[in-house]
Image (cartoon, rainbow, N blue to C red; front, side):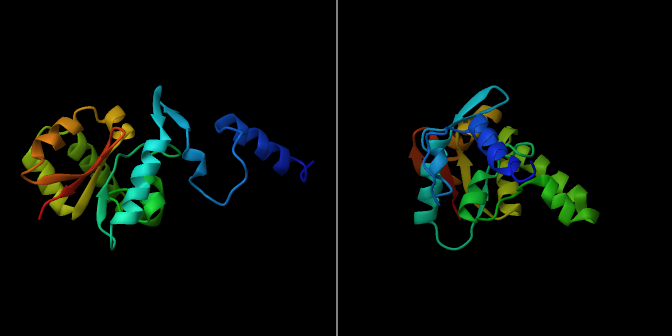
Length: 179
């Protein structure tokens, strides 16, 4: 039974989460084509993120820091840093806490700062935090719109002054910090 379970158990678990119509492939993003991930009752079209991730891969040189929405463990958060390799303000917070046990409060501070940058109304405080973390790109996709509903309005108000839109497709925007 221990030899049979990994084969049949894996097939069963994968079919619970994703379409079994997907042919086997080495492309780790192939599942995003047409996939919908539901997080706290909010449906997220993964294909729009895939296109923006590919744009970053094709158009960004070096390793600039990005700001992206955070979600609890084993959810769709940190997806841009995972798929591009670009550093982000905070990735999986529990992994960070495990690796930096004596500095867990710093991880919590970063979680609060991400929340503040997306949800806080103050443009000046947002800019101070963006500079503190040396953020170059801000991600505003379906995940951010679902869980930080006021962020786009604030970021759009900053365009032309401190931000510029470098990607805008299918509801996903990527802003670049000016200067």
